[in-house]
Image 1 (tube, one colour):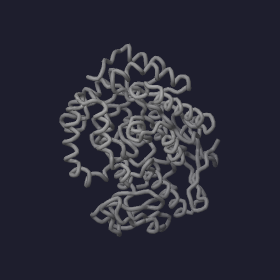
Image 2 (image 1 turned 180 degrees about the vertical axis):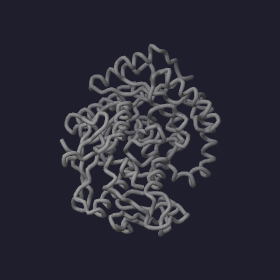
Image 3 (image 1 turned 135 degrees about the vertical axis):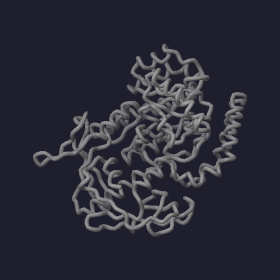
Length: 446
């Protein structure tokens, strides 16, 4: 269990020692662990709730310190994996979603024949209960990140340390990171990409365009070069965007072989599935460096769920860059919101956890003046955060590169001082976790 904390913070193993308080019971369920976080898994003593809106016990008071060991009433690794990999849904969503699966297949079969207005009404009806969902927590769920913070604080106490040094999450001490991505879904969006790049260059922001390889529109070398030569990035967006990629394992493997080939052909390091449909247990077949198919909170997505973290995490060899903000399509069409107020609320919550702010804005849906002005307002706000708060605004491949390098960095003590070793360590900063007023606080070296 120590590995989860060490990998997340890149701290020294000698500062963390986490163990189980006893044997785990067979039955898994939901419980609380301080604050507003909600968790799923097996417990050592108490019986967890069968549903996320059931009677939830808070296990914070059951944490014990014994001989420098932080004893937990659950397996830390199991709980973190259950949330990040959405394994909490296995026992509840599979059977209940059989009818929804049939409806989804029928919808995507008939979709090309359905008028746009009718499709929107069907989508709204499908998502009409979203405000009743209690888990993951809307509008941003940081349960995994808060869990690790709680355990690090408990480790401080158990080891009787004044502070724990670790490698800060982002380069040059940035308080958080933001990336802009664009799913190009139609010919209209494809033709509007140049205009989107013009707009973003006015704010000194580069982004990533996720391109559908087959059926939707022609993907020429000239089109791809028009993106890459301007310093923007290309990712592969599904195969043909028919919503069936994860329907069947055999079919998935046949499709992903083509998807991987397109990735190599396009020079793309990243992938995103259509409509954020996903099965993280199958990601091992993807030959990409990073994926962007998992929402933090999936209340307004075709597939519900969410990874409950605002930090990148590895799914095998693939780095997951979770989508941590609401998509523009949902903002405009489901919420009827033509402001950046919700985005600003989500940004504030993500930055409070020093996380990754990941946007999806479709070129297809910002061609009109009203939507385009909302997009400009968002870019302007990101520039303000970059200039006044030091937010790192970058591209997905740069986040992928940094996170992999950070994962290989190490803290060492030389001549009585802590130093960071590893590739690009000159960009890394040492941070310190300490207790202040009963809470975990961070400070970062300049």
